[in-house]
Length: 352
Image 1 (cartoon, helix red, strand yellow):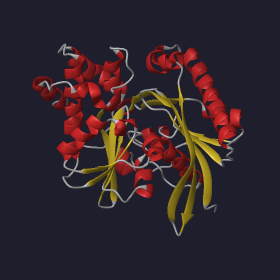
Image 2: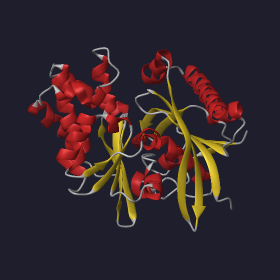
Image 3: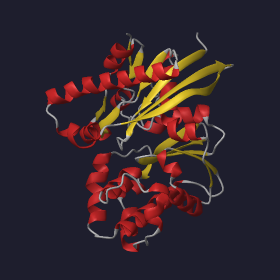
């Protein structure tokens, strides 16, 4: 069995800001995996593509949808070809997350757009995609998928926290790995920033000038999701139904809206962590200084922000690893995390 794999991971998050590409080498020695990042790069989406992914794709006809699924897969493959040409790497495989369009596990519904067959056709490299579907068919949430990588590659920390469109956390509870989405973060913050012509609240500057509205904060914290026990996961459908209408009903200034929402995110992290523990923080939200300061203050934990490549590309790195797990017949979807009837090897392989 091969013990060294060079794998490219592709990650496109809920905020549809762009595509993260990470090439890493994974080595297994005496049953333990280690990694090194060879190269990584982010590719921004054009405004037109972002608009399709964020606003239009869920409303397409069946024919339009499947046509775009193929076109977007070809686009991903073309970006991989650009990446390979720029960094002169020769990967053994590609592992693609795709972009989440539908995610309603209770209905047995999910779709990660971006056809793996098109990626394989464009690149000539075997491609693993569609990592969530089997888990959902086994009664699971199909999410989160990163915890197996957290446990294997970043096990020195008590908690692994990723802050992107949503915040999610994973940790060991005895022999079981527990993981779940904590709250929406950048998916909400960026939406309100766009109302004043900005894409983000850089360093939390806008929020830092606002005041907490206690009534809104209490109602956000009282949303039913936060009292549910894991396994559980969030999707933008939930945000659009529960969060945006609630915030909009208050007609606060942008500063007070964001300040209140930051406090909500920090309180939800504090609710699920133990004081004094260590937390590895990755994802775009790790660069938001004011948000991190509130999370550290309320949780009482030591938040560690690693080297920039890990902060920005950890999810793409772990998807590269999920591809390796698929190729080595190793379960990547943990039933203790997703609630599926059993651990399973998620993914679908396309050989060029």
